[in-house]
Length: 283
Image (spheres, helix red, strand yellow):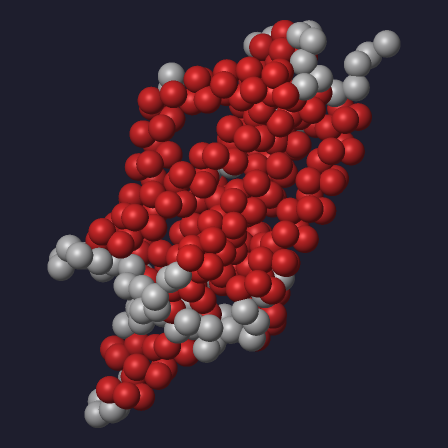
């Protein structure tokens, strides 16, 4: 199986490399969000404070509002990692459906490669893209912090080896989780319109109930509670604690990683059962 998995994985990566338009679009959209959305909605707590408010009070309000981040843009930059993990995996399942329509998927299924290799190859290639995009986003946000006309990501804590590993693990888990979910949906469905309706039904509630983009201080209490169990929030909390400190979080990064691992494990287990039935040979 390993040989078949390796061959099919190489095939998936070759398809990605030979599609420069998709690569450009994947890189361009995060750039637009960082330039326009992040700068356009860069909330300044001082502008809402009464005249004469001491700077120390404004700083305390800012840190509480953005959970330790020095400004909204820094808070938003970490949240963009979770955002791209969701949005960049949306088309993984769609590609499977289009391959079905053109007969490509049927030819792949006709090879001696087992179903696990067919699924695993697409999953590896699909999860790799959001991981690369996540670090691309962080790199851009840090770069913008050194360009005076723009806002940028300002990290206020030193990140050691353990912290870097926690960040990497959080990004890998959230990318693997959503790649698994959308790939499974693509294997189960046959019609592109139905697929996009289903993934939007998942995509929007997941993003809008997370604290990836919303300022924490602007959320009503019920939404703050709901976001604590959102897998996107779990990933982003790991990043923000390592970037800005753990003072405004009830748990350490390890707890959030365990929650993210539980989400990923449950979805992968469900996917294995569903995909095994969907790709079962017809007798």
